Length: 229
Ligand SMILES: [Mg+2]
Image 1 (tube, helix red, strand yellow):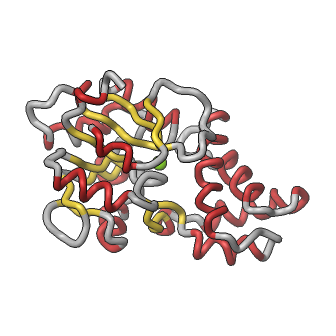
Image 2 (cartoon, rainbow, N blue to C red):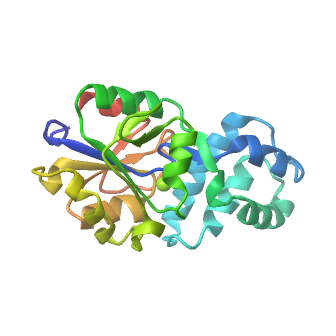
């Protein structure tokens, strides 16, 4: 892509990009309602859920379209989808977003090793920095995961995507880099693509199976594809 060579820094969403709702917790939960035990299907269900959430134009507070698509994809019978969705909504707390996305931690480390300035901007609940550290994905500064310049948590800064002002908390960590030359990598059309576009950044959408509705972003299957930047 024409844009790629201009990218001088990368900011990442956390949910769906670095960590997923933990399928090793959610599979036993939903098996009770007839769902599969296949972890791979729960990983895919996240992206189908995000695509449904994007299509329904739901804001951060409304995960009903996500929950319904999620339980349907993991095999809950149609008649039980409503109750399973409700149980999923009550169980999938902020602290369950902790299952590392395949290839993400390695890709972050490779980007860091290549000298790319990187950071995180997440709609979260005050927990995301601790969870990213504990899951071994990344942390601010040196540690077991990839060193990030910043990890911005919407709960801590008081502004959430799609409000473009949340990115103002990250930009001071990337001095001298034009907004348009900073990529923002997310998995939501409304929160991430539209929010980062409104902030003047360059959006990338993680959509491993091509589930998302069309949008104004460069679509990638995994963070490995960022290594060419
Ligand atoms: Mg996300």
